Image (cartoon, rainbow, N blue to C red; front, side, top):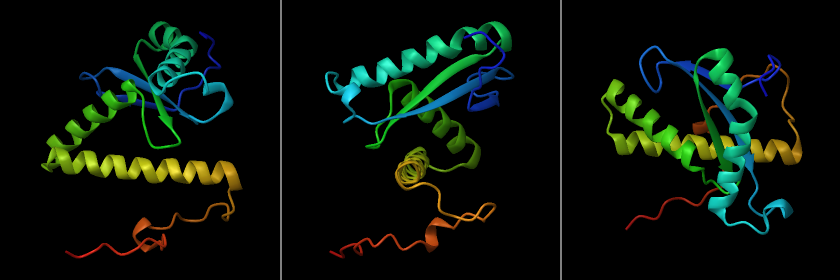
Length: 152
């Protein structure tokens, strides 16, 4: 689509190269959905990434003069190759800026992403039940009913 009505999820400046604009659009797929039953995981991610590119890439390049990266995730916690490349680059930028180890930064980003995907799945199944305008709860104060870590 090259219409001005096409909307993208995020926009950033200087992500892939200095002063360039980059756009992303997120899609979450469910690997066990009937539409995905005849595809392997790689094909599922690739299909959804290509669909996003067909929908938005031409508009981003022609109208916005920017780059586009489709971020495709699965409800089981995986991500497509473009999203993987995006998050590795993001982790590199964050670790360089903050002085943190790259491995710690990647672990933090993946952990945060998994909780956000889990939250998205729960909201899509149960609906949003919170108050409108309520402040988000700090993740550290949540009781996720997990077993305590074993001490060896």
